[in-house]
Length: 303
Image (tube, rainbow, N blue to C red; front, side, top):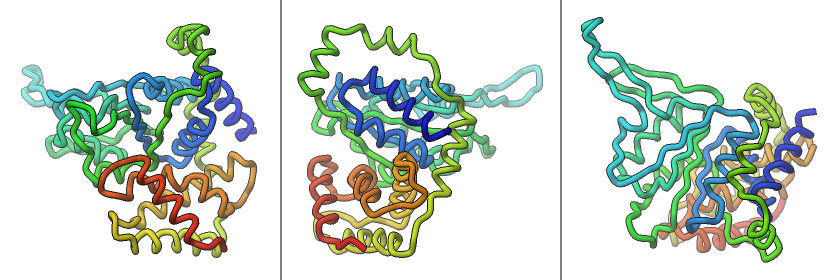
């Protein structure tokens, strides 16, 4: 059964990334909802490890792009090179042509380079020199970024943030997990020995099953009430219809992992901060955004 395979995947991931079961579950929900994931935290807490897990366990083709201040859009998308044999230009595909892209430290690149991913993330294709090239399916972008207070970072614009279905923060491990990490085997060796649990076709079947989870009218009313309440705030911007679609998709994935055929309000509450937090507030603070999300949940009555 595909749900059992999903839980097996989470169990394997939990053996590598210790003490982060809630974040792993949200990250899998993001993937099942066909969304892209932004992981924001200080260096060294497992952001890159999480991306490797989400590529290896579903057996996805993987490319890592290290974002730096001198990275150019062509370094991501590809470039047209003149071919003397054909007397014409030939497009050489960049690393974006893979099933899972790790955009590592995305906010260390300039806004021009960051925006190179906008079309790919929204439409699953790129346009270069007037030609359109489809990207592989399934296609995911997992971006990591350091806090904007650190030296050498460029804040992601709202249009780029909105392309990410979820933003997660891993945080430091608890003492028991940290001790097991310090005394255990090197995580890189464990990752190298990790075998895929499913294949990309099975992942697509899981996504299709999540999309069939029922959303009742009162549940849709509840999501709309959350959207409307967010737009009445004075500190920042409200949630868009795209955010509402993201809430529905992620809640369906969460309900599916709970082995239910319908979405409950608690499912929306579980994923609300991850989906809505980076779309609220103008200071881009994770803590402030999560606090505002919690306030919205407490303000809007359950159906």
